Length: 190
Image (tube, rainbow, N blue to C red; front, side, top):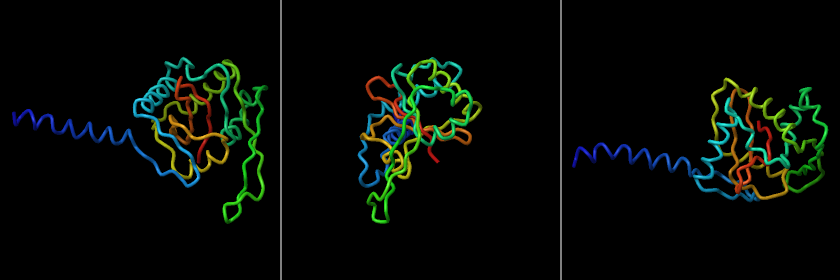
């Protein structure tokens, strides 16, 4: 019995630590509304991203309707001919500029993109896959600074699953719809 306990104890500790790491709570900045998802949902998002960034990509993370490309990612990708030539879906973000007290004093208008067709999504996603190709990928939750940025440009509550993919020199924010696990927002974070 003691031998069995000695064998099981390290495994039990590993399972508890893994469970705690997956259920990671993050520091939410004041004023940001953030809704956690369960571990199973967040893990499903990671698994789906692993598949969609690999050679086994099926483009299943696009819902066939719309995907928002945030201003930081669009600023960089719009310099690429194949992506810049996506005609439909021009969009703008009105981002408040705050004074030293946190009150809006003006706004900045930033360009973005709304991907609306599977063909345009494939073009975009293949480009992103190529950028991550050969890199060791890590997935993590957002930092407080990244949450503040995202909160400033969106007009809805932040709902998990939302992850940062880090690979090579890129950090990609991916926000999924919880019900059908489709990407609804992509952006770059610094």
